[in-house]
Image (cartoon, rainbow, N blue to C red; front, side):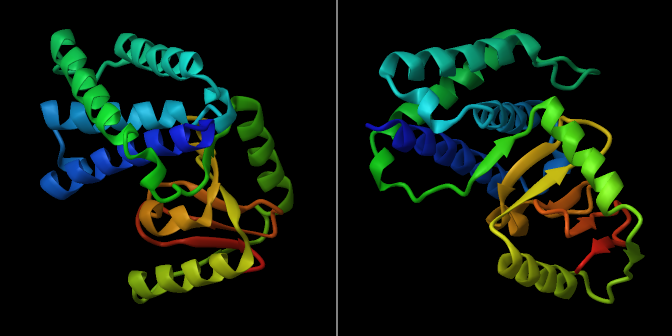
Length: 220
């Protein structure tokens, strides 16, 4: 199995596991306790996995070492709900379930569709994106009051699909939300979460204002 097929299969499996939780339990903002832990740990594992490039998984040894490293550090780092900290034994059990499903899915790795590109930005990259946005786009701000958010989002999706392949998705507050990713993620990930979608050439940007009143910048 090539490194690219292995990497794609890991991401595909985790996304399918996350989607299964969403399908069963609905809006993630209502998740609590074990449901939240199951969702959050899978998302965190996917997020940390996407820091690596496919070629990092070029041998079976590298595959196991990287996956084990991510899981072990995540087990140590994970705090869950601060008011009701999770039982460490339950966290280990969730990772056993995740690994079991990954093992099953890896047997079908070559059959999986390609997962769209997405890569976490490091702190320096995030800072550079924020600085360029401040210099090149921030002054050209316009406010929108979409009469229909679904219509607005469809038109926006149509625009960015025609304009580019990859964009930046960032919070200007924290590098915890900072990605370079395919525009094919837009339909799934766009929500009014206080993050910016920025053209890689810095010709336009959209701010997903948390109250549902988007702001647009530049040539859009």
